[in-house]
Length: 214
Image 1: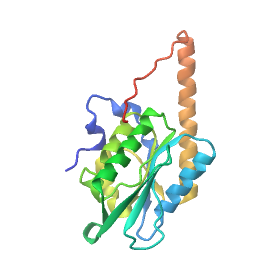
Image 2: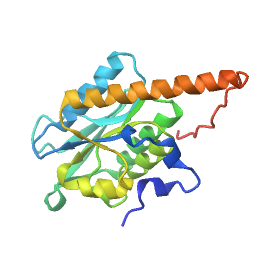
Image 3: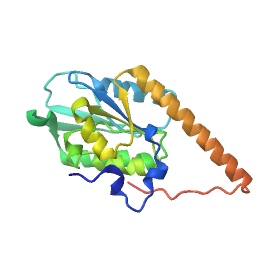
Image 4: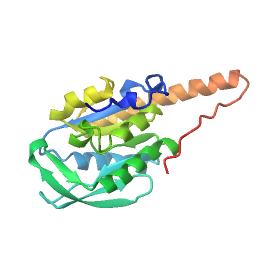
């Protein structure tokens, strides 16, 4: 049984930082090009000048391709990884060294104060406590909104991993856009209220110590 997401940080009151609406998973079915949707939405936000971070898996145009690639949204770096399909759990066996590098880049979403962090998947590796599991915990614990994708068959495992916290989204661009608009609006209201409270308290700003995941 993998360690649940928020229990990975016992010294951080993560539940006080995390709004359940800000941890969103797009539920997709077999045969749906979820990577096209994730990449398109990430590019849309970047075009609008929003500081997004994390990583997306680039769409695989050729079924059964031997390689997959991940894109770091903050730096533009990419990784090409060999993949071998595991029919038993519908997963692709990927290079663990590369996955570790991608995970570190996702964690850097916290340090660069991203508006939104993309995590490519919650799947077989994450169900076992590997893959991007640590990235989910780190980013959520420091209050950065997360967008990921979960196969319909993995929804129950995802909810166990998150402790039931989070929002499930239909695999539609308009639904993802609506979720983000509501999330962004809510966060801006909270930030404005916090700024007003600091002003009334004498203008002193509390600067949180952000971790270094370099």
